Each structure stands twice: as C-alpha cells, then as structure tokens.
Length: 133
Length: 133
DNA sequence: GTAAGTACGTACCTGAAGGTAAGTATCCAT
DNA sequence: ATGGATACTTACCTTCAGGTACGTACTTAC
Image (cartoon, each protein chain N blue to C red):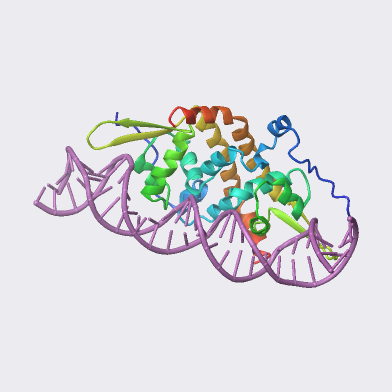
C-alpha cells in the first residue's frame, strides 16, 4: 500500500529544471502566458479568430456575454503576447481588424483542440457529475 | 477594404447551435468545465497527474506555490467533473491517493499539449512582448 | 435632431479566486 | 513530551477579473 513511487525530485540542477517542468516552478513566466490564453475570454477569442479576421464589434456579437471592456483587455493581452495582430485604419468611423499571428495560430489550434474535446464529451462529463451531486 | 466577410450567423436553429459553437453561447455548460480545467491550478494538477498517482502532499510539494486550500478545492472541482479519482485509505495517518480517470487522461493530454507548446515557445513569445514594451 | 454604430477609455462596484493562519486527530521519531 | 507528518476544514482577508455605465468624436440613417 506504500508502493506509490512517484518522481519527486526537488528542483535539482538548473539545466534539469529547464529540460522539463519549469511550469511547476513558482516564478515560471509560462504561467502568465497560460493565464492569458486560458482566461475566460481568451479561449473564446482565439477560437473565434481561427475562423478568420474579425472586427471588434464582430467579436463582441459572436462571443456571447463579453463586455466591451473585457474584450478590449483580452485582445490587448493576446496582442502583447504576440498572438493577435491589430490593424487599425484611420477612417472616421473607426475601423480595426483583429487576426491571428503565425504564433497565435498555433496556440489557437491547441486551445481549440481542448475546447472541442470538452464540448464533444460534455454528455459524459455531465453524467459523471450527476453521480455525486 | 470593406471585404471582411466573416460568418456572423445569429444563433439560428437549436440544432445548428448544437452542431458547433455552443461555446459561444452565454449559458453553455462547457464554459464551467473549461474554467475548472484551465484554472490556475487545474492545469498544473492535470499535468502533474499525467506522471502517475500522487498523494495530496506529493502534489503540494511538486506544484510550486499552491496553498493547501486551493489544491483541495481544485481537486474537488476536477473530481466532480469526473477527471480525477480520489481513493482514501482509512488508516490513522490519513492516506489519500489521486489519479486520472480515463476521461481525465484525455483532457490532461490536451492541456499538456498546450502547456508544453507555450513552454517550448516562451523565447519567441517573450521576444514578441519586448518589441512593444 | 436624434438615434445608432464604431472602437474603445475610464470610473466605480461586486463577487469570486486565492492567500494566510489556525484547528483537528493520530501516529512516529527524537 | 515535543515536533513533525498526514489530509484536510474553517474563518478571515486581499486582490483582481469581470460587470455596469457613461463619455468620446464623427458619421449615416430615419
């Protein structure tokens, strides 16, 4: 019963820490990026942009429940991480287009894979939840 | 310049909404599950458990920065979603083991794919961030 | 002239995520 | 007998994601 033998190597060397599992370190910068990408609206923005370039209001209408403030903030996070490209046309009714960068396309695909899997397996999940509710 | 033609079909029929993109609906239950899985500690717990069964304290030590309270809560979320299996041995120093269910294994793999990609591409991301900082 | 659309910025507020600290009951090692 | 490990729970507090609402500057449509 005490055979649970799991690798619990403490930080060890720096190179070891770099090889894999820096995620588990308190100050790993990946965690910030992950937070932007997996934030409530970040997921939806990335998946939405997989369908192509969108204007601000297009995204707002497509993504049910976003406030303008949160959409703007999320887009700024993703832009500063290099995942989203913002193109602004200085015309008099403002016109701004958002699209995925090559880097953004790759994250978005992985985020979509996760989101799609959850959506597709919702029945199984809801059933599992019922058993202990 | 006004050729940005993006599919902006309003909710349409219910079956259409079911086929794909229920995620974009305000009240889609997938969003809750997604929140648990992509929560700050949810990601790390799932990836950690991919390495095998862990005890509570093992997880606490492995995942840098978690508080006991948050670890317990995250494990309960994931358990109620059917992703994590909790096995408790009624011995006198408490002994509890956490592992992934078959369902949990599948989400965890996709979460890991995302996390690994971000970790692997951190240099590119940080560089993109520098350009506009 | 008045309402609506465009892409936001800003101020204010709430609610929930998350942190800190302590308590619990029982053992084992020193 | 004192301290630490085990797996939590509870209470309290802080922080921030997120919501609501309003302002902007200009245009087109009614």
